[in-house]
Image (tube, rainbow, N blue to C red; front, side, top):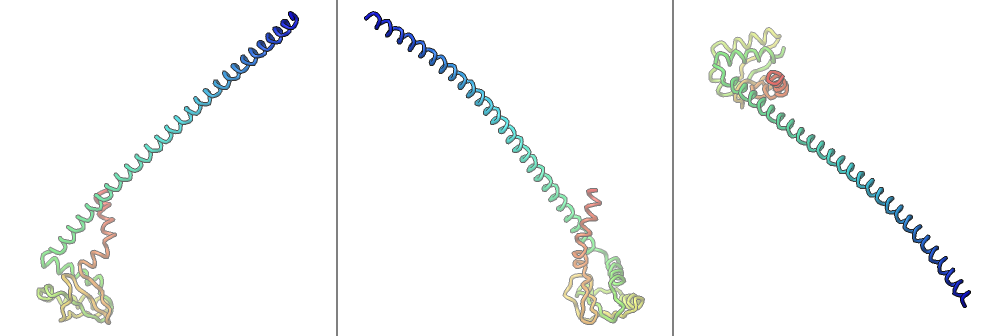
Length: 197
């Protein structure tokens, strides 16, 4: 039996040795797997950190861009407000010209808008009642110089200031408001250049 025990002992020693080898190999493999997992975890952490930093930078750029847009919008609104105020004051100054200056300005408008045709000129109730002496003659002279004929209509136009030229049923609105409105964009550009250039 001692031979059998010896064989048993030898099998057991070999099994133990093989088991120890397998355990050592398993430990080595486990160590390698753990080390690889740690490297991958570290790399993943770095990637996540880089991604978070890039996202933060992107968000900061968006915020800066939004703030810049808001700033430019506010500046533009302020400029438009100033321009609107200047134009309003200019129109009010035009409306409040003294009689002599006002009617001189109207004569300049007649020179600009009169056509070489026969027509009539309509004034509003206020202006019709305060036309300077000889004003109709001056209008006729201007029209004649342009090859046309203009007479002051006895009808009142439903207008506040300025006049309406009527040629063969076609009306040319030469009220201060209409002329001012027609040149609103051009005047705004001029004011902008004067104030903000």
